[in-house]
Length: 385
Ligand code: SF4
Ligand code: SF4
Ligand code: SF4
Ligand code: F3S
Image (tube, rainbow, N blue to C red; front, top):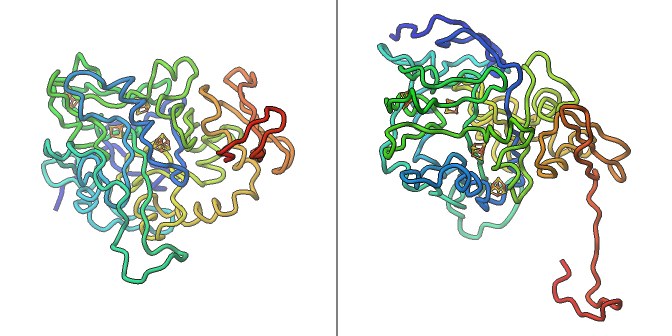
C-alpha cells in the first residue's frame, strides 16, 4: 500500500482528469511544442547529428544524444527505457478518453515520490540498438500483404518540455525550472550538484548525467533560436521534412490558425508519447499507420486509432494537407497559417508573430518530368528521377 506522495491536484488534459503533482498547476503563457510525423521519417539521423554538433560535442558528452531516433519495437535509448517503466507502472487502463490507471506520480512505492529507475552506464552505450529490426521473424513462405504482420517504425525523441516535468519535481536542489514565457524546461548548471534524481525520475530518460562536469544536462529546446523566432536545429535540419516546432496554446484556449493547436486540438492527428506517465509531454506524434492498433494505443493513447484513420483521408482536410506541406519549409516559427484554393492548385501560407508572411507552399507539389535527352543543352541524362 503506497502513501500519497504529493498533495497538489493538477489537471492533465491528456488524461482528461486531475492527478497528483508536487507543485500547483502553473502553465506557461505559451508552450514550446513539436509535431513529428512518424510516417515520413527515414532514420537518416540528420536531426541527431544537427543537435549533437550544436550542443553536445564536448568532452564527456560522447554518448549523450538529446535527440535520438530509435526503431520501434526493439530500439531504445537508453536500453529498455520505456518497457522498464511500463512494467513498473502495471496495468494502464483507459476508460474512453479518461485514464483510469496510475501515473508515475501516483504509482510511487512507499517512501518514494516518483516511480522511476536508474539506467546502468552500459544502457547508454548503444544509442541506435535495434535499428531496422522488425517485430518478429519473417515466417517461411511469407509474402507481402496488408495489414503488415511484420513491421517496425522510427520514433524520434527529444525532451518533451513537459507541463508536469518529473525531472523538475524530483530534483532536491530545485535546480530545474520551467520558463513561464515559453514552457522550456532547463537545468541550472550552477545549482545542479549531480544528484541524478532527475535521471531516475524522467520516464523518457531525457535528463542525462555528464560525469566530466558532475552535472546533468538535457535538451534546451535550442532556446537562443526559439527566442528569436526560429525553429529548433533538429527540426530545420530534418531531411524527411517530418517535423515542425512552434508554440502551443493552453489546452482549453486553442487557436484554429495556430499550426500546432490545429494538429493537436482540432484535427487531433498528433498525439503525446506515453500520456499515461502523467507528465503532459509537449512533443506530439502522428502515429504510424501500418502498426497494430494495440501497440499504437500503448504508445500514443486512445486517440491513436482515429488519428490513423484521419491520416488515411488527409486529402479531405485542406488545412491538414497545408500544414503537412509546411513541415520543413521554413526555419522560422509559424505562429499562424491559412489555406487558399483547392487541394489541386491551392497554397498554405504561414505568418510570423506580427502577422507578416514568412512562407508559402503549394498544397500539391508540382511533378516535373525531365526528358532523357535534353535538346536545348544537347545532353543525355542518365538519371531522370
Ligand atoms: Fe524533464 Fe524528462 Fe519531461 Fe524532459 S521529458 S521535461 S527531462 S521529465
Ligand atoms: Fe537538440 Fe535543440 Fe532539438 Fe533539443 S530542440 S533536441 S537542443 S536540436
Ligand atoms: Fe527522421 Fe528527419 Fe531525423 Fe532523418 S532528420 S532521422 S527523417 S526525423
Ligand atoms: Fe538536481 Fe538532477 Fe542536478 S536531480 S542536482 S538537476 S543531477
